[in-house]
Length: 327
Image (cartoon, rainbow, N blue to C red; front, side):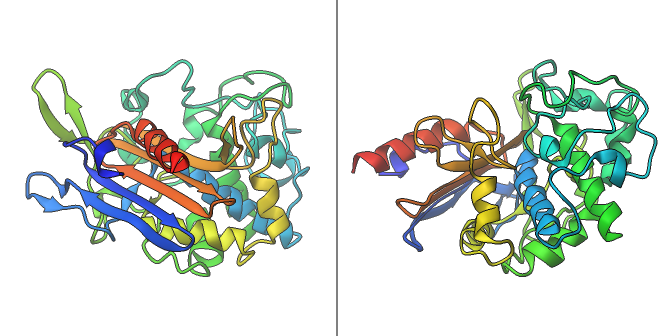
């Protein structure tokens, strides 16, 4: 059933976990194209904005531990001059994209993430704080709490909040409090110029030369609170089940994350919600990167798809999900 939907040139991985057992899991294409190193089931794939779900889980852990509140204002927990940014923005508003904070990459205006680095080299970005120059001097987009508008800066700031409260890099905190307890040993925020073993390189197609080139000059060298984690399919499946089983945060906290937290009902905390059946999913897209993973709790079905060529994983996900429902 699944194979018929997968393009012949697909590069990445497709996995269906049904009732805790692999229904379909297959890797395609190459992690290293010039050397023809194949993608494998344990290959680590870049996930772009999907990392927002990890950050949201980390924030909910801090809330659960009494170190933070959803109503805490950013002016209370950040250690730098906010300038024109409203200090009364709350953690809740950052989580559900209603803060109005200036977005360093407004996806409604900019098409290509690589355009950010024409004047500000991407090799400078190795921490969330390194992104400050891209938004700190901009005005608010709208009054905080006014409406939902997907916002990358909001999650950069959430990463900074984690760092200010814990005294350690946000990714180190996520590793100790989320990844390790859930045995997500293949997940982390790695620098592109020093990737560990079993990571897939990501490639962009050049229409002019009809060749693929690496995305190393098109994205942050290291991920931030806004995204950029590498992970494996099995780690993602463990993440879903770990949250649902209350292993790192209480089940009530996870229920809040996957419940509508915006007027349009399409977003929780770190997770999108399907319009029809409301099952949660998280996703990401960067030059050469595309990722989606959904969890239908009623069916106990997890569908995870990653591509290191930035291919249309959303269409593939929809086709597979619809076919599965018809069975």
